[in-house]
Every structure is written in C-alpha cells, then in structure tokens.
Length: 340
Ligand SMILES: Cc1cc2nc3c(=O)[nH]c(=O)nc-3n(C[C@H](O)[C@H](O)[C@H](O)COP(=O)(O)O)c2cc1C
Image (spheres, rainbow, N blue to C red):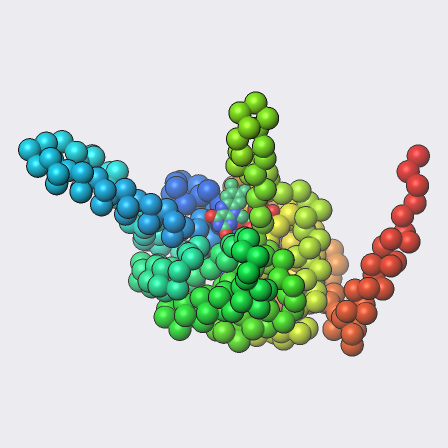
C-alpha cells in the first residue's frame, strides 16, 4: 500500500510528537509484547497500555500476606506454602516489566494507564509508571457512584482531587479518560484541565453486565463497540474544543473503525483518534488501511496535513452551544421518515 507521500499525518498529543493521529487505546495488548510490536509496525502514533487496576494490586498483596501468615502459623510446613515465584510477581511488577520492555524495543510513545480509587494509590502507582519510562499517563476515572447520600458535586470533587494529586506528583503529562455521565460535562472538563490534566480522552466505555437466567448469576460482558458510537465523542469534542481552546489535547475514543472516522474526529477538533474494538476485530494491520484511507481522503480533499484539517468543523461559529445543540435535536427528530 503506497500512501500519498505529500500528506503529513503527524500530530501532537500531550506535548508528544506522533507520526500518526491513529492511537491504540487501552486494550488487552499489555499482556503480550508481540501485539504491541505489531501495532507499532502497523504505524500507530502511540500505544496506551491497559489500565493497571489498584484493586488487582491490592488483591494480590492481600493474597500474598494471608499466604505468608498461614505459613507462619505452621512453621514446619511453611516452605511448602510458598507458591512458585511467578505467582508472587505482582500485577504492578508485571505491568512495569512490559512497559520497560516496550520502551526498550519501540520508538513510539507508550502511554501507561492507571485506574485507582484511593488518592495514595493514584499518585504512588503513577510515579512508578513514570519512573519505568511511560511517556505519559492516562487516568481512567471509572466510577459508578451508587451511594444515594453522595451528591454529584461530591463525586466531581473526589475525581478532581485525584487528578490534581497525580498531576502534581508526576513529571510526565497526564490525560484523563472521562465518562460522558457528568451532569455538567463542559464545566467538569474545564475543571479537570485546570487541575493540571494535559489532555482528555472522550470517552470511557461502561460495560454493562448481563444476567445468566440458568444460573441467575450476573455475568461480565465486554461487547466491542459499533461505528455509530463514535457520534458521542464527536459531538462533545466539537463542543469542548472551542471552549477549552487549543491548549489541552483531546482524544476521541469509541467507535472509530475507518480512515473517514479518523477524519471526522480530527475535523471536530481531536488531536488523535483512538481505536480498540477495530483492532480487536480486524487485527493490528487494520491500522495500515485506516492510515491509507486517511491519507487518500486528505489528498482528495486538498489538505496537505492533519494539522490543516483539525477543528475545521466545530462549534466555533455558534455563540450559544446549548441553543445550537437544542436546535440540532429538534431538527434530528423532525428528520425521521417512516421506513417501508
Ligand atoms: C477488551 C477491552 C479491554 C479494555 N481495557 C481497557 C482498560 O484496561 N482501560 C481503559 O481505560 N479502557 C479499556 N478499554 C476501553 C477502550 O480503551 C476504549 O475506550 C473503548 O473500547 C472504546 O473504544 P473503541 O470503540 O475503539 O473500542 C477496553 C476495551 C476492550 C474492548
């Protein structure tokens, strides 16, 4: 596949120079350096490793200390209680090893992702990731607030405290991966940036568990996204880009499958378009096709670079973004025509 050579695909994300706006978002590639290398070979601009979950680390530490305690009560047999060494290699150690290995073997930026709950947890693990060579850190703020006593303001305050704590603790840029469910997303997004985030990833995807009627058990279910799911990040990036200005990086995450999906993300003001489902469905080499389509589209439409396209479609022209949104809502509902 030969790309139109005169088209410049480079972009800047979190202050990092990327060769392409197509980024592999957090996905199951962290377990296997092979896939990470294949993604780099296929041309992704950067790779986000899967999230290191605080709960995983804590669970392993609890498991380790109870195993040791059990051993100490029966000293004679204690040695027999020690599991084989690999099982004692904690989740954090395995993660750091993959990160270091990826940094050693690849030249593209590697972004480490972290999902923690406690303030101490976020800052401490973020520091470890930065020390291990992560070019940036993505905080995956995944929380389902189920406490009826907790107000929206309190939830936001907790998230902001986490963000500012991590941003102040690490020497590398921090992106925050948000859910679309904050009650005043534009306000909250601006506060996350003020708290020190160098960029926002829009959006996190919430996986809804299903119910198995045979066992009456709740079963986890990961569904790959569909192309129409890109509309939510597109809409919010179009709203936020003019409000936040050119400073903070914006990454579109959800439903990007093709080169034209990447075109749409950049056109509304994203710096990068992230992909997980498309890569899982079609394999790492799919990235080559996406970049080829992107280059061809840019050339055919008279753009010499991704930078030239960025933000060409956004709400800059609209003084009242809320009224613009409402007008579009009314227009959309009125556009329905009967099928068949
Ligand atoms: C199998 C799988 C694993 C994922 N793991 C993570 C993760 O560890 N951390 C995270 O922030 N997002 C994770 N995601 C979410 C993706 O990074 C992405 O935000 C989401 O899938 C939407 O993008 P897509 O439509 O390109 O898949 C995962 C998604 C899938 C399908």
